Image 1 (cartoon, rainbow, N blue to C red):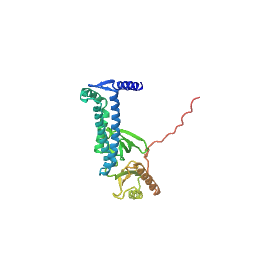
Image 2: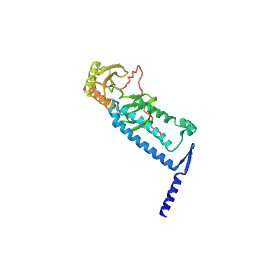
Image 3: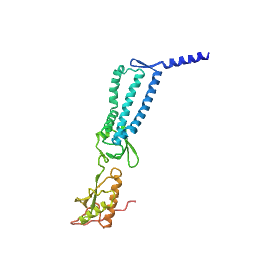
Image 4: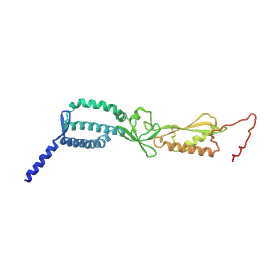
Amino acid sequence: MVHRDAEDVYQHLLRILDYPLFKLGDTSLTLASLIVFICALVLVFLLEYLLRRYLMRRVLQRTQFHPSMQYAIGKIVGYLFIATGFYVALKVVGIDLSSLAFIAGAVGVGLGFGLQNIISNFVSGLIILAERPISIGDRVQLGELTGAVSKINLRSTNIITNDNITIIVPNSEFITSKVTNWSYGDPKVRLRVPIGVAYGTDPEKVKRLLLEVASENSQVLKEPPPEVFFENFGDSSLNFELGVWTDVVASQPRRFRSNLNFAIERKMRENQIEIPFPQRDLHLRSGAFVMQTPPPPAN
């Protein structure tokens, strides 16, 4: 009796699993095939993680590729594996993709219009991973945004600012906009610091003091040597520019510039050199000012 009840339960369960839920093309999708499809997808993502981890740690690290290139190869291989696994999972449950060609084409046209930005960012992500205009760890400037690249995905890139704020930027911004990569190639760059002094100041003395400021800063490179340029005669000041070479702009540009400004102000103050502010002189040829006291308010 117990055996018969168990068999009835088993047969009932089979009927539930084999009950057609809906049709895809010429194939009826049952609950059993849906469970198999979900399990296959879970297995695909698990295998993709293990494959990418093995590829990064056991294969790519032994090559001469740059770490960012290793990351890009691992990502691309992972996405290709997921796409192949998704196709295999569909075939396992018996879904004939050829019968869905017309439906897929119609859906594709609709998605193409609705997902233009996503597709654009996806393609831009592939271009970034392949050409590597930016890499993980690079310091970049995109418009008003400046920070270090922490992660590159197919749709977006994460940038961490100096305030430890993560900004998620669509990948298309790096392809269509002007991007400054402070870490690309040679990290050595020249920084220009403007300074204005009062008229009547000895320009040679200003040049000597600015070069002293550069030589006293340990983050200023000795080669190429620092230079001082006499820019122009301004409305209120003689305008100079201190040009220095450094390799720390990629990591701490604001602090480096601030340290130079502090040192320049201190050096000028110690040598009694005035840093003027904009001013105008007013000359009266004739007449006089008449000061009038306003009438008291009426009660």
